[in-house]
Image (cartoon, rainbow, N blue to C red; front, top):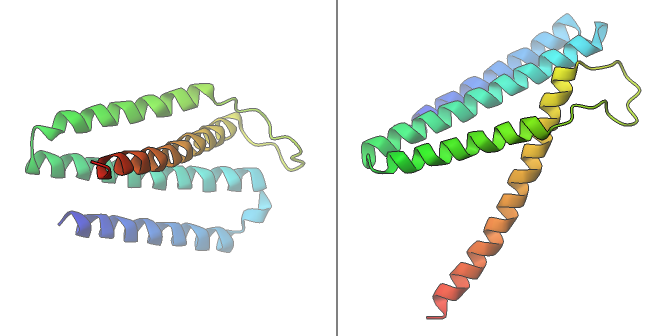
Length: 144
């Protein structure tokens, strides 16, 4: 059931994204590029937020049904993830891009874009670190 719900949410987000793209080409994003970029970025943020929220909520629901004791662990992981996001937002400078000659973007878009970039760097680093640590732990367990 969990996989079906995730599949339906994924399809819904894909269709919404395609409709926004088609609508943008029909209306013509070229008339006001700053507004068009803001709208596309906000739609992307909303879709990513919906996907993450759906997966987190469904994960918590599934773990609560299978083993209610794991609910505290899920809550701790969720709080840690929110803390990382808040710190990334607070650290993000939101400065104007270097070498950009186009129309100026709003400060909120620049701040959110910098936040997403910082989160990408943090999670890529965490992924690489987890692969290395996992290989070391697996190697240490196999020596016994």
